[in-house]
Length: 233
Image 1 (cartoon, rainbow, N blue to C red):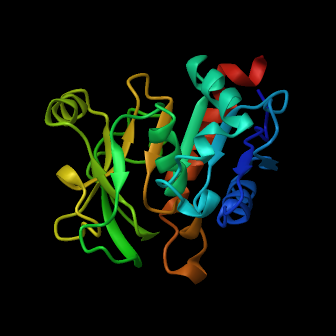
Image 2: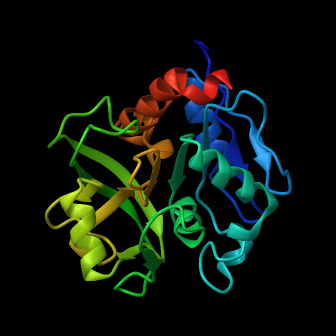
C-alpha cells in the first residue's frame, strides 16, 4: 500500500483551482503534482486523477468542450475505463461530461448570473470512493463559484441516475444555486469510479475558510486511492 498515493491534478490553459486542489490533497496525505494538459500519459503509479475548476480555454464554445480534446484526456479516459478514480470539480465536471465520462450536461445558471457563495449539500450515499467518510443524510457546507452549473439530463436518464443511487450529492432544500434538475450537485458514472461535482471541496479544508467539510470528499478520495488497484499497476 502506498502511504502517500499519487493523485495528479490536471492543468489546462485557464485552470485556476489546480494549485488549491493540489495543496488540499497534499494536506490530506497525497502526493498531488500538477500535470500540464499536453502530456499524453499519466505518471507511473497514478492512483487517482483530479480535473480541477477554472475556465479551461476561456470557456469558449461550451465549458469544457475544448479541454476534452487535450492530449491528457485520452489517458484519463483509458485510466477511468480500467477502474481508475477520477474526480472532476466544477469546470472539471463540465470537462468530464463533455468527454462522455459522466452523463448529462452543464448549462448556464437559471439566473444567468455567476454565483459564488457557500451552499449546503446533502450526502445521498456513502457507497462511492468519494464519500466513504460520510453518512447518508450528512450535511456539508462547501462553496460554489460558477456561471454554468445547471445540471441537465434527459428525464429517462435522470430517473436512471436516481434509481441506481448515482446522485451522490444534492443541494439541500432551498440551496440550489443554479437550477440543476433534481437539485443535483454531484453524480457518478455507472461503475462509481468517476465523480463530478460543482461545489469546490478544495476550498473547504481549512477552518480559516469557514468550513472543513471538503475534507470528507477529498479525504475519502485519498483513502480510496491508497487502496486502488491502480496503485499497483
